[in-house]
Image 1 (cartoon, rainbow, N blue to C red):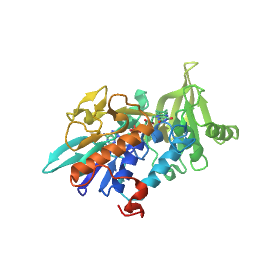
Image 2 (cartoon, rainbow, N blue to C red; image 1 turned 90 degrees about the horizontal axis):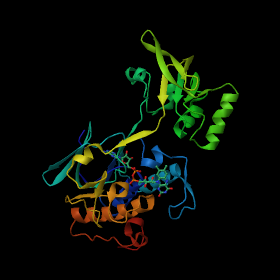
Image 3 (tube, rainbow, N blue to C red; image 1 turned 60 degrees about the vertical axis):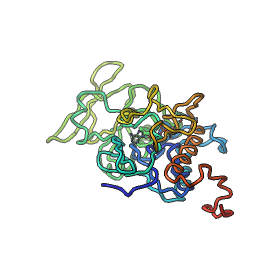
Length: 339
Ligand SMILES: Cc1cc2nc3c(=O)[nH]c(=O)nc-3n(C[C@H](O)[C@H](O)[C@H](O)COP(=O)(O)OP(=O)(O)OC[C@H]3O[C@@H](n4cnc5c(N)ncnc54)[C@H](O)[C@@H]3O)c2cc1C
């Protein structure tokens, strides 16, 4: 699918990209985000949704997932699209604009802000060789629609927030829920761990600590049982009825094709100047991926980078417009004094 030409396309829907999208709307630019993940939020959504953050100005403390929600609300004011589940791989120059490419779509754009953080995230795969043939036939590494697991025997592998969240949420919907983790140390929110432990105590959920997937057994070509190995006793101990496995082992990140776009890179970061310019006209970088002297990789600096990058991109596309928009508290776009 080829999308309509926009003034600005932002690669990455982490906090930097989301704020950049808001800022572009405030400037009156047509803009969009493309992100590899199925949901906005970048590291906050993928790596630590249940952690409290204390150093975002104006929030004495905020859960990472709630900060993402607030950013989405701020972005919603201008109704600009966030295209999720698409990894940007290609960049070509076409006439007077660029075209960004993913596996399925093309995004023509007059300017680009790369807010790609530490690269595109993809779910970490089960390391056991027996798992590989089952991806797409019983092993699913993304839970998009929990209703699909109704009446199924579900095994979740992992000990973090996602594993515990889904173990709790699928309990009662799935025919059975089994949670498997290699240790007895959990990296999930305390309240969710307690909720799952209550399910386990009541016999509603099975929990195997110090276990890992050892073998997958099929009946008529369909997944039927998973054999678990006790990693302490190093013995194969248990077969569990299972027709779907959800590995929740975190994410791996990869700069991928962005590293091949001819931008100046230093340790997987894009070198920019104080205007967030990458050295290639019309392409800017912001947030964790942008490197300059004194850079701090923080949400707060990502927001500031985003404002600078978007203002520069806007001026690049519309040279007659000012770089500095003035204060939002005075802007007509918010119904304030005419600017
Ligand atoms: C455990 C943990 C705790 C933290 N706590 C704090 C804290 O308390 N305070 C603080 O200020 N910071 C904290 N940080 C750091 C903070 O999360 C980062 O600075 C912030 O997420 C950077 O935002 P970003 O938008 O630049 O990048 P990211 O959040 O990394 O988002 C980048 C997005 O770009 C997408 N992307 C990348 N490549 C592509 C591609 N090719 N195509 C499409 N999409 C792509 C990714 O999928 C991702 O969604 C913490 C980080 C971690 C890991």
